[in-house]
Length: 90
Image 1: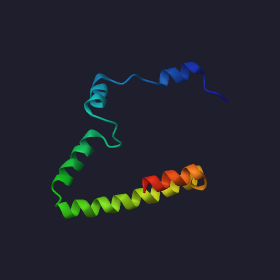
Image 2: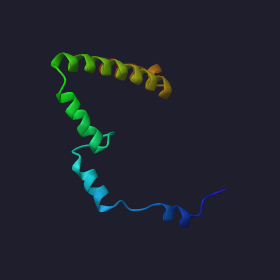
Image 3: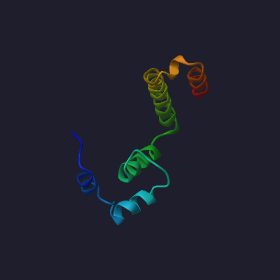
Image 4: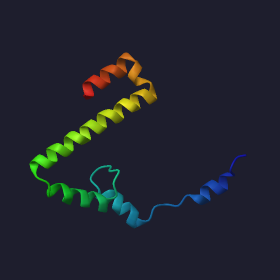
C-alpha cells in the first residue's frame, strides 16, 4: 500500500528561523549538536598534550576498525581500488 501524496506533504514542515540560524551558525557539518560540540571543545581544551595524543591514537584505531568494517560491508575491501583506498587512508 502506498501513502497518498497529500499525506506526505502535510507531514513535512519547513524549518523555523531559529533552526535555520542554528544550521548556519556552525562553520561546517557536524554530527554533534552545537551545545555538545562546544562542551567537547571545552573538554579537549582542558586536556594535556599527552592526553590529547593518547585520545587521538585511540580514535585513529577506532576509525581504522570502522573503515575496515565499512569496506567489508560495501565490498570495497575486496577490490583493487578499495584496497588502495585502505592503504592510502592508513
